Length: 256
Image (tube, one colour):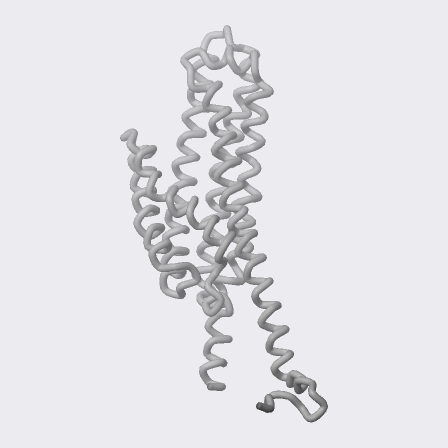
């Protein structure tokens, strides 16, 4: 039987130019999609680790009743912790910036809202870290009257700034998850987990601000989204059709 797909000289016919260009473009879009997906996923994990580890180091020093003496003896540990917490500034801003061109294809308002909440969040968190750094010079006066009281106020100021920052993050993340659910950039079950977890997180931060200490337990649902999303983006990435954006999809439908 003669293979009709072969030319008379026994070779396969050349790939049409349009088809070749489409394959090249498809490959370029795939590389771009996975690059952005993995970068954003890496930032989610890096922020979770940097702020979490930094906060843990600082808390190990300022969590006691006579923490000024502990800080005076181990101020390097506090400085390292504060640096890790500051590192989260670039990480969260990076998430907002990298997400912006992806979200903008579907809703510029949502893209701006998410980026704005990231900016407000990192400003609040940084204010809190700056209050912690003020403990370092204060620790030199640990034995003086009123020093411990001032130190406690600084620690509480950081805690308040943190809760307000997390509340802002929660609001921005809800806006983000609504768009992710609507556009199916990620699976809907994952977007729904964020839509459930972040309002609970916001509720916990408000409770903490008013002195009801239940915030730690109410962060767990939100952490599920922030831990699962990075791994999904690493291995699967954003859904290809949704990643290309509404304009591209609408054009494809018109051409069809």
